[in-house]
Image (cartoon, rainbow, N blue to C red; front, side, top):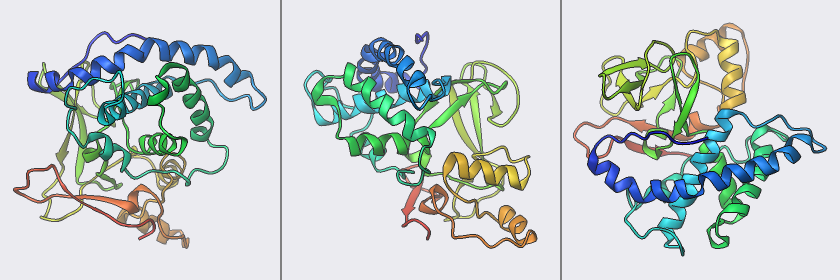
Length: 289
């Protein structure tokens, strides 16, 4: 796997990001080599785990960027001293809502955590390896907050992680649409459909008028699917039960009585406040609230 191109929103953004990008690229080949060496044991061991998929490999590289950012943030030996993209970025990532402890025993994320840890330990300087609980927090925060980047044919070509954007919640009747756009062509498509190539920017657009203080939502799922399929996807991939008006109405029609929602949908919110300097004002509450 080689990086053939990278895109930035401006020259200033590119220059600010150069130190982290260069630091991360230094470890890409060794990390993928370590993954290849350990993969046979992962697949052929007593548990006979499934092979690592493309999107899982992409998430491994995103995690590498987070660990390089950590080294930069802490000023560890061998890390660039150039100012990070923003000084609080690593602490923002570490503070993201995590699905840690919510995955049922034996799930894929628990399987991969041991493999990822072994690969990083083989490649990174000893002082760069975070404590086991911090690495687990990073892995689990990333799994429920990373944005996969897709082409119109549903093939994945990368991922993006931005703590502010991760505060956007899910709803099956969203007031935002996620759009991947081509900066060069000025074109875009909704990440659940549409056509084109070369989409290097991710944007969110309002689908209707949004009141001041109203929570912002986009759909994590394909919103044209039925209630049962959406419920299963939310539980399996995001560890929460959707309680939007659409799902609540469907659940009520079925006469089901469910426990309070637990997971990302109940523990974070992003609301729009006109005139603020940050993309959103945020509120965090305890699980199940």
